[in-house]
Amino acid sequence: MERACLQLLLLSTLVYCSLGQGGASLSVSPDRSQFFEFESVSLSCEVQGKSAGWRVKRYTVSGESSDCGRKWGKPEGSSCNVSLIKSYSGVYWCESGSGEHSNSVNITVPAGAVILESPALPVTEGDYVTLRCRYQGTPSDLTADFYKDGSLIRTETTGEMTIPAVSKSDEGLYKCNTSEGESPESWMTVTVPTSIPSPAVPVLSMSLPRLLCSLLVGSPYLLVTIILLVKGCRSRAQGDRVEEE
Image: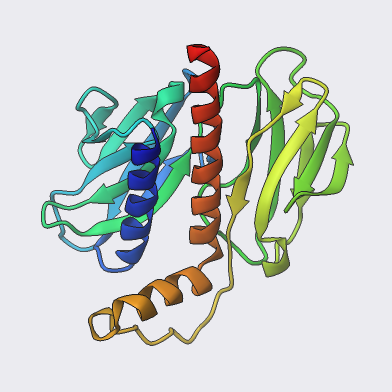
């Protein structure tokens, strides 16, 4: 289990390092990172130009790395339709035949009965964003406490929290808590639009230590991905020990 978790952390870093180098981006429909078991999600590789051969791949905390259509998912061209089960929690991305990678997305299928519907993909500053706390049973709408970075920020009787115009300060780690239980945490990324593109960083000219430091300091998303994966691994390991006893 520990080995699989370390491999998943390494893969998340490697996929992140490849962002912007490929000719495709991964889209998620519906756009959220948490799902109940047996819900469906559509993952699509949106290809730029005439690039071909892109496919959806995943790496789970159980140590499985494979393409869509091999024991999981139904491929349709460069897309993949997945009926989710708990063991499918992990990192998903697009990859070309030549090894190029798209952005990556973490998908969580928790064992609990409460999830937080929050965007899996980055939102743009100024967007209207709704976070929804869902309970798998009935009633569908519950009074929910919403937390950001571990602190209570709002209580809503409808189970929904809206942000009319999201800002960079809203970026962070969110979860919700109801009388029926607590959701896992999910990171919401907020991007700031700019008319002046940033110059590309010549990755090949950077030393490995400098590259890793740049990634870790410049990407809170990557840091939170690692934190969430570590938490998931610890919870999984504790559950395994309980079953053995």
